[in-house]
Length: 119
Image 1: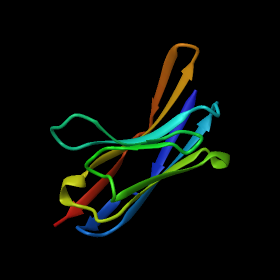
Image 2: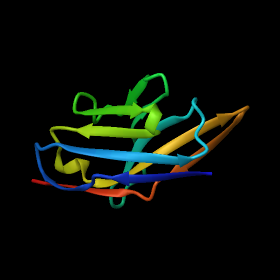
Image 3: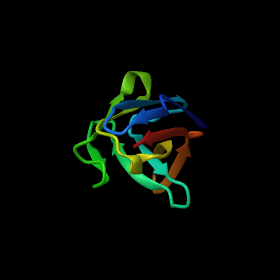
Image 4: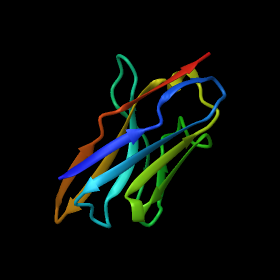
């Protein structure tokens, strides 16, 4: 089993920065893909960014150039540095880890951390 614990959410003014972290524990395979998703009130959960163990990244168009995802494999921790925050970035941010074992995906979620951007 995998446990994910997020930290770093809070209230920030528009244009400001915020950094989220997520520590994974349990059985973590080196091939795990880690990432961040978010869900705003009344909306579906959406991708923010993902990163592989080798450092390949993928970003949602809405955050490209403003958010940077990074990962410390030794600590099984993923980060997202969020700059130039906008009110529309307000959401609950969820950490995600995916294992691909043979042909099956195993997906794990953190409990979520609230990010609120005031205008």
